[in-house]
Length: 492
Image 1: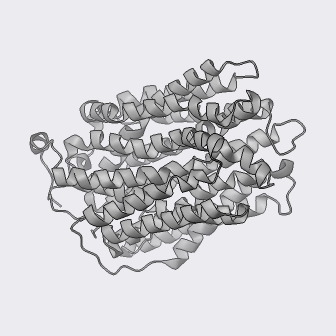
Image 2 (image 1 turned 30 degrees about the vertical axis):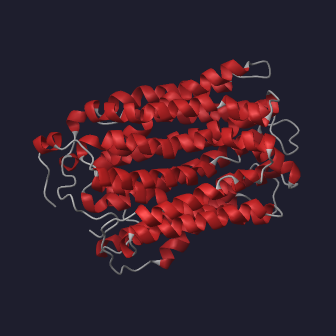
Image 3 (image 1 turned 90 degrees about the vertical axis):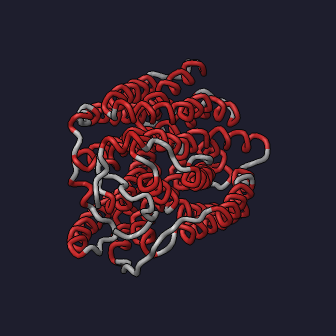
């Protein structure tokens, strides 16, 4: 792979129209799919009552979605080499549409959870395909701004999910959270089938089934064990420590196996990107950020508004809408600032804002005003907006071309794992800290969970201080797409 000289980077700042169209199709499709991560969050309490399951059980409709994505995403390195981008796109949206239909028709919790799992299988491969496409097709000088657009998918879609869900729940019922999305998914499927044409080559690469199984057992065990601590006050048929221990062992074996297989270029998930400091710091920060975004903002905050302030599902959804819109507005401007300044000047104040917002949430009580909640959520959204696209662009820019797909898979996997862990951890803390726990956390339980989220925010500030300065860039930052015809999802 040849290197692009700095001068040539500045001369090629435009994104070809065809490339822009292709990325636009992927972005719109992914937006519809990722919206479903959190669309149920404001309806969890209603679903808990209607389906006659506890709060900790019903939250698996969200964390199970994230966990399934975390299990499937590591296989995308294999999928992007074995199948064409069009084949992956069509399979992705077909699975998502099928899962959405099952959810809408689900007669009970088990069928609803099955539909969510199928939805997640379709969603999982879209994010790495989107991120890899940007890194391989967009000139270096425009990556920040383009990745800012992807922020709309990764951050804004989950952020406005509660708003959309609240509006539908209060007017049409929970089934329409899925029936309203299905036509959009089918339309994206048709448009993609007609417009999505990417030059690519495929090669026969082996799928390491053992690695897939270890990944599923590892992440599944960790999530189940953590959530079980809050189930009925920690009194479960199986000790939570057993799945936690099994999950930890499986993850260790998974990592060990990848280190062995990558010597022969056969790893399901090549871990060599983690040897690069900039990438590793970015991954850690993204993980901490998603714990706060999905665990606190998307789950705890709606629970606080519904249970403590006793707001309706519609008001709850509208309360988080300004923050979601702010994330969308910040996407491209922050990305453009990254193209000029680098990550550090943006990530540090973003992490500080996120941590402050978490601790301010912990100060809320039964007498707090709705305006205060909205203001704190706006502060949180501003912090997330300053961190999201710079971290993703900067971490992937530290990698050579042939590791883009694996770096994207690692980044996307840890996003989902961290989000699921954040949900399970914070919901469990809220349950354990609730007086006379009867299936629903109270004000004190939610306050304890926000304190835990505040600790996560402080860890993010510490990690942000270690983001390298722009002048400390490695040689791989300028070694980017030297040939404009490089294929999306192709081999090394």
